[in-house]
Structures are given as C-alpha cells and as structure tokens.
Image: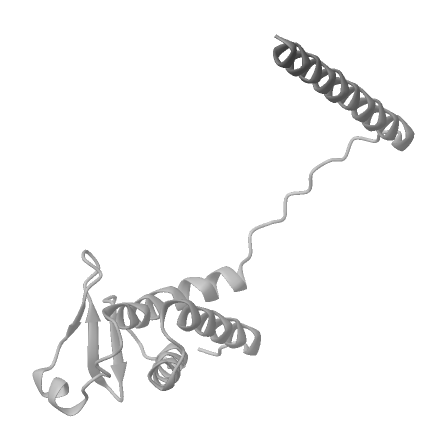
Length: 159
C-alpha cells in the first residue's frame, strides 16, 4: 500500500502533538516518537487483531476490550525492554495508531461530500441598521439601570 506524503506529514504532526502534551519532551520521548513513526509507517498485513509487528515478530498486542498492552512473546520481553519512564499510555498510542491508519487512509481516499448551505440574500444596510438600533437600546437600558442604582444608593446613605 502506498502512503501519501501529506498523510505521513499529518501523522507526524499528530505524533509530535501527542508526545508534547502527554509526555515530557525529553530524550525518552524522542526515542518513543521515532518508534511511534517507525511502527506507523510500516506496511504489515494484519490478521484482524490489534497487534504491532516488526520483521515478522509480534511485539505488542492491544486488547480491544480493555485497551491494555500485552507483550505476546516472553523472549521478546528479555530482548527489548522499553524505557521505564514511558507510561503505559505510550504503548496504547502505538496500538491506537496501528488501528486508526487504515481508517484514516479510507477517509482520505473517499472524503464525505461537502454540504452547501443555501444563503438567503439580505440587504446589508438593513442588517447594519438593526445592529446599530439594538446597540443604542442596550446602551439606554444600561444608563437607566445605572441611574436607578445611584439614586437607590443615595437614598440609603441619607437615611
């Protein structure tokens, strides 16, 4: 499957925003971002499960009910230890990215039809006059209310 360059730049921007808001943007977050982009851009055929593969080995599995990340292979856990400072949400982001990419491509290839709203022709001068009249009325109400409060305060001070 061919990925459009605009689509990849869109995914890259989303990844940067996600890492910036949910992780402290330091060395570990940068390594996570590179891993995130590596997995997102891979074209691996899937069997309908939410998993992440690299070189044919299944790395992580995201449970679709609880959205918890599970390491499938015990020997994989010995070879690759994730950064301890990365939260569990970072691995959930990997699974979410893998899940959402085909849907985003489908939406980009077949966008919904634009709905055009019919405009009602109006006279611009009538609209401006109505706005001006409403402003004057609101101003008069404010002045009358202010004078009423001033008179009430004067009466209470004199008593």
